[in-house]
Length: 105
Image 1 (tube, rainbow, N blue to C red):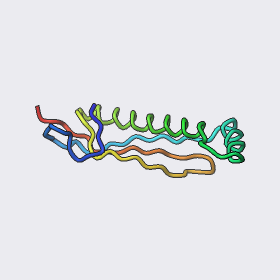
Image 2: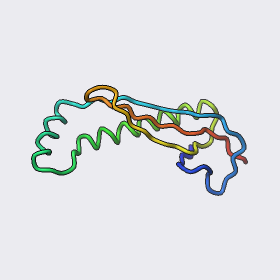
Image 3: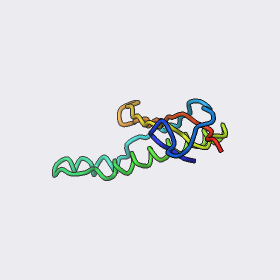
Image 4: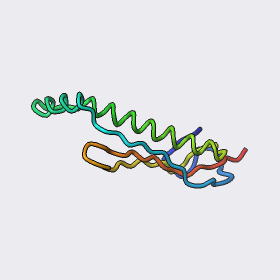
């Protein structure tokens, strides 16, 4: 599956638009990560535990979006975007969305 943030797939024509697809996940902070983050706040620097958490969440949301596109028979996803929203204290949703398309032969 080709996944791109652009409106077109380079070097390919779009034969059909199959509609909007999305994938999301909601992740919560972990006590162990919170303790390490608190310590890191004292000395500064990257909160690697949270970076990993968000990277995993983005991958999962994109994988779910790709799975939905595949069920529609898509060859590619265009105009892919990611967004994050706080759901509750310590929990965030990652949403991936884009347009599923069928490419011309």
